[in-house]
View 1 (cartoon, rainbow, N blue to C red):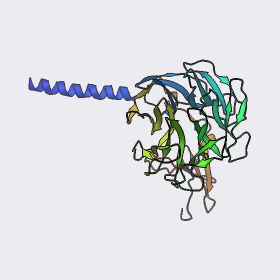
View 2 (cartoon, rainbow, N blue to C red):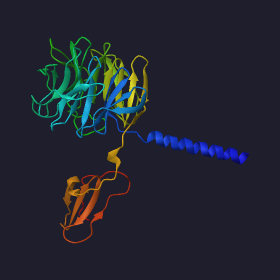
View 3 (cartoon, rainbow, N blue to C red):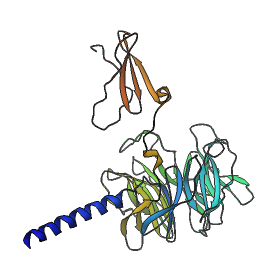
Length: 357
């Protein structure tokens, strides 16, 4: 009887382990979330997906080979605007929130990125169509596809207050280096703009990054790395009375989006929801109903398409190639073709040979 009890425990733990593996097998990498009511829309595998705020299996909304991203719910929750490269350049599209045929809304020629909606139902997006690099400019587009430019320079993101009177915007686009605790000249800041006055800075008290402004009930919620990691903070409409709401260490919070008093954001590969009223932050356990085609073995017929760097050795006898995160040494004439990447599971880039070989 005692042996039978031990066997029962072993079987139980193996069953539990197997069920956990099965439950975790359909996990994806979730980006650019948006929230309305009890629904979240996010990007995974380059497509848009819809899931419950309680988690569970997500439903795929788009299947086009192009990438769909930066989805945002309309004020009534019936429509989503998003950016996609269906016809080549990245443009703004809309579709029913429950799924349907996307309609193209902009013809900018590229990099038209959805930011959100105005309270009166216009799409708010950022574009470089009417300015020069590296400048970004906010614009709105109405139901008749009429574009109205917002007279702000370097405005890469923004959120209106409930009356549509004041725009709280992120000045400077993402500077591109993914540096932790960046405090350089292109660090993002949050500003306030009303049509009756010049824009004023709200976060100049901090040299680091403050971005993704979101208005709710008289306070501005935003992401900042004031404690060393990008977390959710808030301040009043004049940039005072600062509060910290999440305290993640390590992974930065990304792509925050507001919906009826809740903020959804990306943390690592997962989604989190912060409820303003309760102060509760929780992860959303989402699974994808996908065949994960990108994880299948793929025979690379033309490796040259994946080359990211080519470096000649100092003596001219070898060439160092970097492709798909691995480094190879090839002889200039005859000889062995050797992979020299350490077997640590890490990616390498820009490999080169030193003079000593």
